[in-house]
Amino acid sequence: MAGYDFDLFTIGAGSGGVRASRLAAGLGARVAIAEESRVGGTCVLRGCVPKKLLVIGSHFAEDFIDAKGYGWTVGARSLDWPALIAAKDRELDRLNAIYLRLLDDAGVSLVEGRARLVDPHTVEVAGRRYTARYILLATGGWPYLPEIHGIEHAMTSNEALDLPSLPKRLAVVGGGYIAVEFAGLFNAVGVKVTQILRADGLLRGFDQDVRVALAEEMAVKGVTLMRQTVVRSIQACPQGDLSLRLGGALETVGEDLRVDAVLYATGRRPNTKGLGLEEVGVRLDAEGAVVVDQFSRTAVDSIYAIGDVTDRMNLTPVAIAEAQCLIDTLFKDRPTAMDYQNIPSAVFSQPPVGTVGLTERQAREQFGDIDIYLSRFRPMRHTLSGRAERTLMKLVVRRSDQRVLGCHMVGADAPEIMQGLAVALKCGATKEQFDATIGIHPTAAEEFVTMRDKLPDPEAVPS
Ligand code: NDP
View 1: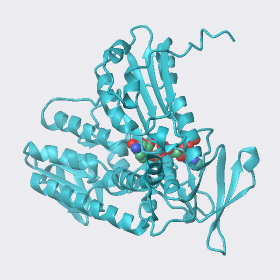
View 2: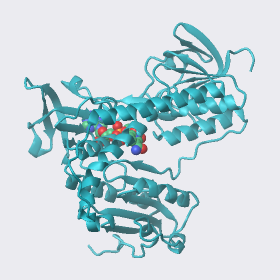
View 3: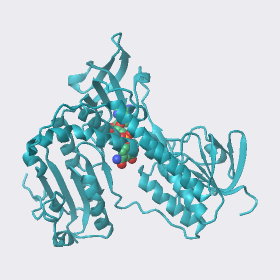
View 4: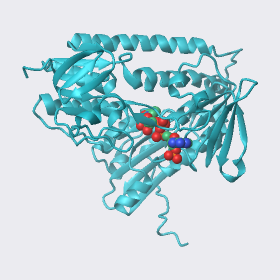
């Protein structure tokens, strides 16, 4: 690969870009990675990690209350929010240092600054040009804000993770992953949260029973859900708070909602602007995502893209797996396409959601005859805590061969439980194999291997 400065030049040092660069360097390739901000990317610096730390921190509020049912007397307690933010920041600094060290140890050259493509083999960063046999786009995504009057008063998840103090009243706009996670965590620490959904329900694309159960549980915990409602404008009030003009559902048309802060979690868009992509022939879709083939190759032979910038499945472990496939393809002479079947995911809402495989609706559309096993119960912890929280578990099974196509859960530890079930689904487990598996008692998870009664088939129920 002589003739080029590098064998691989990666743009964006997030989860996908760092993994691909390290793997390539480990195989002896000469690799550079450009980053305009800190090394670590969305997951480490502005997403999964800080969010999960704040979710864990917020959960103690309920734990203190639940402890009473177990005989504890818990004295005065209060949350020092700035201390939590500072502790979280220290952890991010530690992770950032680890990422830097990993790149350095692997022999990857870090180029600081914003990169721009010059031609299919040349990148410019801070006025200097670098040539490479392959260029990898791994620039991730960024929060999207709709253009409404007063949107400059809104914050995104980026700012919410660094709030210097807690607002008393918070509006969360959106019903996706980020919206339910932040609504849950701020509600848990005592903020009065109103979540505003333009749709009829939370978490579009998830199993309907999951969507309904989570909305019920969030409402019980105190989140006010306004469905079929949009924010028409945001006005800063002389008193220092904000007034949201609402529209949409009949009962909220023209109403105003007064809050101290508003968080928009209305989706994310790929970071593709100003990189010179289209000028060199890289194709983008209508949302600005880089169009790639099954081997993550763009419309230009020497340019590849992985992770959120391709808007395939926007999850960190997926970007990392795409990186592995790409390096196998480019540097091991083993063309490898990523397998997007049965990818588990979790939403760190309160309670959390875990899911893998098909929803009931997807399964019915794809295979017709489906058996559904569903259980809704009070978890053991809450028999003594007295909390009214209920767990939901659901299995979606193909009737013809009894293969389990989907597992869904809303309840404590759902993300931890779902990881193991994802292995079973990846192996093609059947309902008989679930039934033959001995449960671990007493756990909530055992319910997944002890559900025996399927729900009545809606097709067979006389109307
Ligand atoms: P999502 O796409 O999940 O949700 C966006 C939400 O915003 C939807 O409820 C959507 O409504 C709503 N919305 C979109 N545009 C508007 C608008 N103009 N006005 C009002 N509402 C609007 O995006 P997120 O930002 O929550 O998350 C982005 C991605 O990040 C996720 O898809 C996921 O891949 C990833 N992620 C994963 C996490 C995890 O694994 N735990 C955590 C956080 C993020 P509607 O349903 O009507 O379209």
